[in-house]
Image (tube, rainbow, N blue to C red; front, side, top):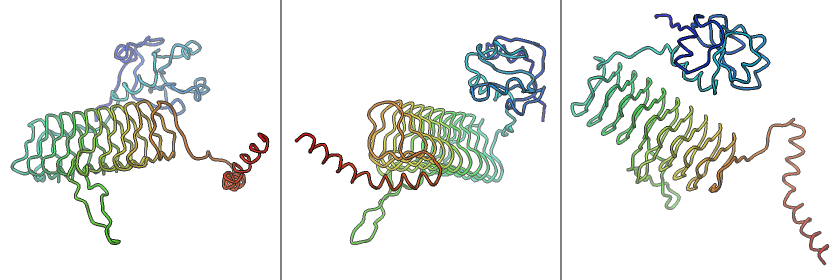
Length: 341
């Protein structure tokens, strides 16, 4: 593989950054402040790591103006070092380029429409009337169900499953093991027996969405499950039938969302958050890790539930006190009534 290398002058120009130091210094890769060597570029985006500046061996750094003021080495001064790092990461990305065309081992239905610029990998199965648009890359052993559409520029890593009647927008990335459009958990109980409800909706996913490994998005019971534009989903997330997620919302790993919940735009759900079904979360809400959301949220802001980690002995004492809260509350109300009298 060809070695990737750029001078600081080239990187500064691409970022619109102020260059301080050797413009001809060649950078061969990216690394953390702690691990970088003299041929690599690093960045400082978190004040917690500022103390590493004096010890880093990095050949150059991405720094804010404030942090660059006291730094004597090579640096690119930018408004947002982390955003600049995200841009430069693509310069050093070594992901292999997929070959255009359909692999001989792929099984493609006669009625499927596949753009000539798409890449269909080994062992892929594409069902009837599926549509694969320009520049789509489908990795080995993916399954694309009937009447499913994948928008231009999409990328499916190996072993992704898209059930029938799934609509994927443009430039969507889906990591390995994800299952989109599986049956939602729908049953009606009668005389002690669960009767299955056919899930006859689909899944609609907007543009520029990223879906992590082994994440599952269930098809709708009647109408579609909806994922908005720019949504980012981490690994091992469960999204139940008829859930709606607004544009540019991000969900971290192991979030679980029950059926028919609605999440607004620009929200952030940290790892392990759980939502009960049939509730609404408004725009611009941040929910901290492991929070259990049991009712709708109507005001933007940050929300938490549960207790933070503490020594086990202290937790046991507090758990006992927690069970006594109702009795204590009743005693307080009784005392308040006596005082009022």
